[in-house]
Image (cartoon, rainbow over all chains, first blue to last red):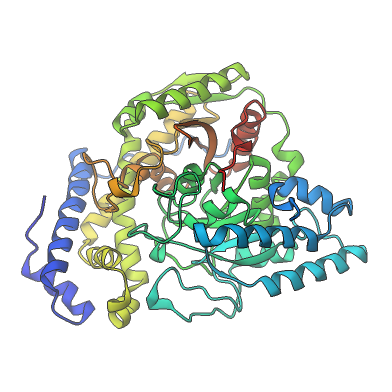
Length: 62
Length: 460
């Protein structure tokens, strides 16, 4: 699975590394980003957009 | 050659205290062992035998004058190459850091030296402890297989006796993973228990320095030496404290998470048998369900990607061409993590922490038990080292699944050998309550006393 990086994302990386990315590096980064995004989707899927309820009734260590 | 390298920290310590074993004899034996195994295994990034022998002679003189400092006096150890050691190179496994020699010891190293431990040198790490790529270190059980990571040199050195104990660092399992792969004991202490000042950070939120040793007691002794004593107070993990019987033990097990993590049948069978051993030792085993554990990996990934990029941004700019390709991709990927995603990870952490807390409280658990890794060491030829993969494929991200919740929630996690399959070690993982590290060690010690696994060593 790969994902097309936006121009803005590529520019963000380029601004730090200080040069154009090689095609091979760009492909590896795209694939890694796609995998990372799957994890983010996993988190979004459980409805974490709303703040999680906080619980203070148990103090650790007992 | 003396067999001093074969005995653990506890036995060596007793011998030194009783003046039946000289520090020089012990260190010479361990250095001989290192010399005999290193060309084959490559566990060390740097060693300084002359300095170690000088320190050994000095320790013998000090002890001879009545200046015995305690249980770690004269014990030879290794330090992962991402932890600063004054006057010794600390290059974090990267050609981008060649020639970096810190002026000061990291806090843990300082404490251990004060306790009398002798630092032999630096053990090999994956670059920046990121777990990407493949260092030269070989698995002593089967050189064709994965040797663990990222504290790979520390795990191997302890397993073969080229150090009696080692320091590793653990951001997503990097102490517990090589401990399990190499058949030794590894602890990721509770966040905040150890002063991590002076380590080459990967993720400030997740990193911990942790001990690797051949037995639970040895691991506790090393931990005791790493602590700033006032932090632990009366609960210091001394030999006596670790070996004190533990009563009313309740061990939780979430078989649903085992299945979701892809635990293979051999590992399932061996760790289930260990669960039976715990039950026959008097523990109550409670089946629980905590599916939130599986969120540890994506949360850890978001934190570590962003924080590693921040920590190494200057290196990426100035020496990017000297950083390994896969590590560099991870550092670049971290630049793409947004504040919104980081906020999501923070909420996720709260979600997982609450779920684990409620599981522990509702089931009155002492510890939550699982396999440390879902498989035995894979063949290097079958291994993908891409930590950004989140599911489906069997690769190194599987190795993080069981272990990441401890990092994300700041909890102690202990890996203990519990069996083998096809000649390869298998370990169980005990997740504990915060600042309850000693309880985990006591529970593991009780298990260890009933089983032979900590006495098995690779034939090297």
